[in-house]
Length: 443
Image 1 (spheres, rainbow, N blue to C red):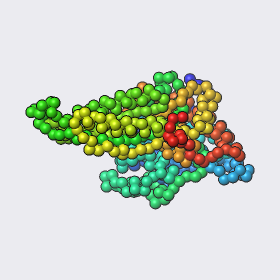
Image 2: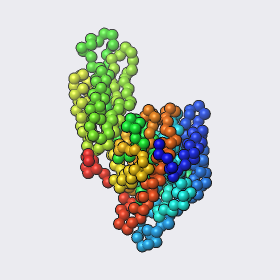
Image 3: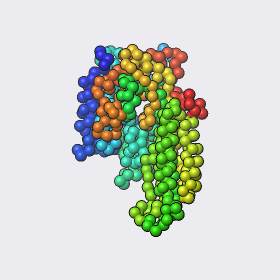
Image 4: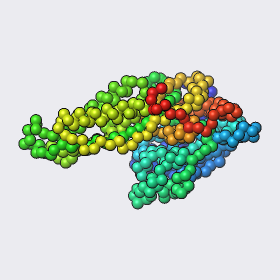
C-alpha cells in the first residue's frame, strides 16, 4: 500500500463510521432522502464542513455545498472571467438497507481533500467546492439525481408535481432547503471541472488487483417494455400442441436477451441487459398464461451498441411471437439516457496523480448511473473508483477498506492541484461539458 499520503485515513474512517450510525434502527445503513435520518446525516456533514473551514450553503436544487475560496488570480491577472470553481463530491442518501460506502465515500473523500489542502497551506487559484448532491438514489417520488439535475439545468419542471404519501416533490425540495421556483431555470456556469470518487460496485478492480479505476464513461441506460399476448385456456384440458402460451414465448425471449447480452459483453465497451420486471396474467395455476410483460434494463458505454440492441430486440420479439403463436401487444422504449464520456484532459490528470502516488490503475466504464453523468453535460468531468469487496453494493455487506478510500482521496488531492494549475493558464479550455462520442459510436 502507498504510504506518506497527504490525506488522513483516521478522519475518513471517523466520518464514514459516524454516518453509518445514522440509520433506521431496523435497517442498517438506511438514510433515504428526505427522511429524518437523511437530514441528520446532512447536519453532521455540514458541521464537519464548517470545522474544515468551508463556507456552507444549500443551493436552489437542495445540494449541500461547502466552499473554500481560491486566490482568483486568473481573473486578477486579466485572464477573463472564466469558470472559478473546481467541484468534488457525491451523495449521502442510500437505498433501503444499503451500504455504508455508496456515495458516502465520495463525499467524505472530497471533504478530506479540502482539509488536507488547508492543513498543508496550499492555496488554489480556483475556489474548491465539496458537494453532497440531493437524492442521487431513486427517491420516494420515483426519480433520481434530483440535485445534480437541478444544478445543471436538467430537472424537468413536471417532476416537481410528483406526489409520494401525499407530499409533493416541490414541498420536499423546499423542506431540504432548495427553491422549487428557481431550480427550473437554474444552471451553474462557473464550474471549471468536476471530480467524483465512488466505490466501484463491481469486481473489476478486485479481479485485476488495481488500486484505482479511471472511469472512461458512465453507461447510457435505456428501458424497454414488451407485452406478449396469447390465449387463456384450461391448463388441464388444452392439448400442449394447441396452446398460445404467452409465458412460454416470454421465457424464450428472456433467454435470448440474456445470450445477446453475454455475446455483446465480450465485445469492446461495457454492455448489460436485464429483464428486471416480469409479470403474467391471469397468474393462476390452472390457466394457460394469456399475457406476459417484460421490463428490460439495457446499459451501454457506446451509443451504437444500444441502437443495435434496440433493433435486435424488435426482431427477436417478432420472431418469438411468430414461433409461439402469440402477438406483440406492446413494444415501447420507455426511457433513453445517452452515455456520458469522461473528459480526456481530466482523465489525464487523474492518471498522472496515480502515477505520482505509485497507485496502480486501470480504465473501465461505469455500468451504474452517477451524479457525474449530469455534471458532465456542463463542465469537464471524470470519476475514479475504489475497490468493492466481492463487487458487492446496495447491501449491508458492501465493504471498502479505509486504506483504499484514503488512496482514492489522495488521487483526488493530486489531481485537484494539477488541474488548478492547468486550468489557470490563459489558453485553458474551461467550463464546457464533456464531448460526446461522434454520433454515439465507439471510439
